[in-house]
Length: 377
Ligand code: NAD
Image 1 (cartoon, helix red, strand yellow):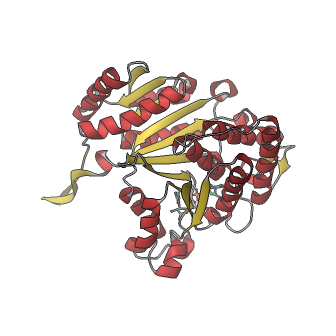
Image 2 (spheres, helix red, strand yellow):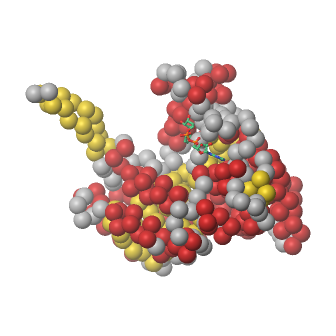
Image 3 (cartoon, helix red, strand yellow):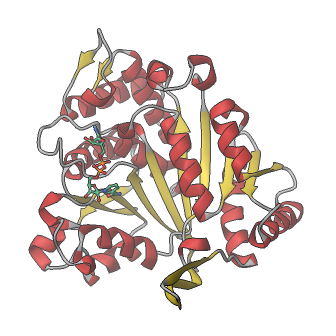
């Protein structure tokens, strides 16, 4: 039995989580998946009750869970709180204490939405890439850091880009593993031409490839070229692995190839413990959207697709993940749209109606695909 901790959070997080939960319940009831869902508070909703955006008890429940599904945190109501208790601190603590070092961001263009991209149809149509970003190291965490006075009215700001062999290998392993399950191609991205840490990254990824993943096709690319290639010909990539800073920029650029924030799922994976369990947090890329919260118009698909990533990456239930992604694709193909992805002549629906449309499509697909015995991964 897989224990899943759901943390809806704030704003539209609560609305989109409700739909993901209904989809989760559907899989339990109709596909025999052994999952148990629990709920907890995070962000502003936790602050309102406990005066902290994440209690120690909820943190422990996240550590003990087989996977965590999060909505979104934040909102204008909590904007003036002290930095230490802001809603976002709850999310940052989850990521830090769970040691989530690999951030997976797929950029997938559903044919029905290809026209929503700012790029030409033939450049993005059929796009299916995945960026693995190192999340806990590099220049955002390296020491020394800070701002100091250097006299004569001058100041100096310092951040340090630093990576060790172990940090590169653990994120590299996640990326090679995923490439094996996709189209078997991995592109490693750094700036080995001008940065020693980049050179180390390239050498260590190459060593890891030789030692453990020689069957995967590996290429290397400088980060500036990768940014260019992502908008020139994104379909050349399968899986990209890169550091924290470059991954921050490249994953946002790749995400926007696909159109709307409301469609983008993500996963963050941590280390595997002695029982073989890997800590993992799944969440939509978007925030709590205070401008539309409570109106029932948010797109729940990013959260539903994040749940799909959980089925695939935490539990190894790929058939069910495929089925869910297919259901979402078919719903879009049928012309059903929330406001953020609305196009002329399509059927505008609420958050709840979008969730229902996905479940109706799952019912239809399930009638065609017989259930079979499965084992967890
Ligand atoms: P946002 O992602 O919440 O919203 C940006 C825009 O996209 C808004 O116009 C919003 O209406 C729209 N949007 C976002 N998700 C949508 C969805 N599912 N369906 C339809 N439209 C959607 O970003 P923001 O406005 O910069 O931030 C709002 C709050 O969310 C802030 O408090 C911020 O700190 C927080 N935030 C949280 C997370 C997180 O929890 N991971 C991420 C980003 C921002």
